Image (tube, rainbow, N blue to C red; front, side, top):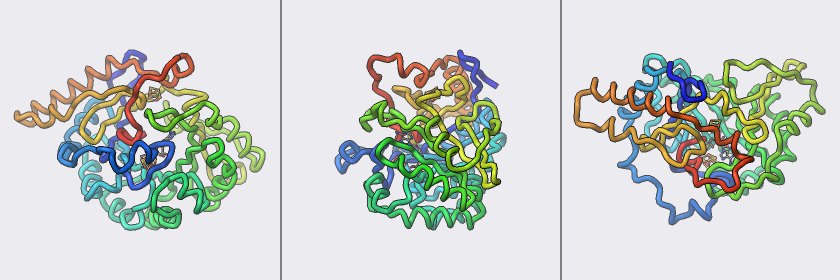
Length: 338
Ligand code: SAM
Ligand code: SF4
Ligand code: SF4
């Protein structure tokens, strides 16, 4: 196990497989910035599945146990089930999950399950068709996403996790409605505080609906009680419904930052290691994996580099957020996957 300067182990890796997306959620990839003129990563720059698997293998050998595939929209990456199959076979990886906007799940849930994926999180901010179009600013319909969620249940992924970003004036009037939807269907809902990720979403502190307010509203409707974390460093505060209808959680990244327990690294689609969601830049691992030397040499160079970078890590952006006069330029969320 390796630990950083704040005694945090490296346990968890998010792998972005593409920076592209078929939605333009206003809080993540606003069209004014990610419009037709935006230059996404050229396909030849992306890591191949073999390269991703090699890098994930090195992360596993230095202590990573959980891998989550993300993007952009990860299901846009061609042949994703093949990558899932390769990663499911990496020794040491105990938990392989995926976060998706759900739009392509109808066709892909079954092949992903058969390839060895065990858990799926679907992002869902509203149950209103018109509002869905306004938030995601794309041609994708809510019907398609709901059908994707059903397909995932059918393929054996239940319980599905749902991620809801709550933004004041955008969907905060739907908190109870979304909770009720998740309760009735047996999904686990996570309310996420709207964050100042990237440089383009025009975030303002007044847009944030504090997790505490969300919990108060749910509590006013259903009896709930807090649950202990599933594991050390879990980012969601969890609650169970006392009537037995499952659980929900809140992720208070803004009002109660959890940097102290942050054991998460991120790998961009072109093979850069980011040690924080708010890092300005990543560390290149692709040039190592593409070195013209034998595989054992590549593997040990990857392990040494990851270890060296993690041991030096001191990131805690969310804890320092309030003290910063001006936000530094940081990587975009759609580039490293949240
Ligand atoms: N496209 C996939 C999806 O939407 O699930 C995966 C990538 S997306 C960047 C990962 C998660 O980040 C989503 O659940 C999304 O809602 C969340 N997210 C994006 N922008 C955010 C923001 N400004 N604040 C909080 N969460 C955000
Ligand atoms: Fe795409 Fe996900 Fe960002 Fe929405 S949150 S724009 S679906 S990457
Ligand atoms: Fe981890 Fe950085 Fe988020 Fe803090 S701000 S929890 S260090 S990713």
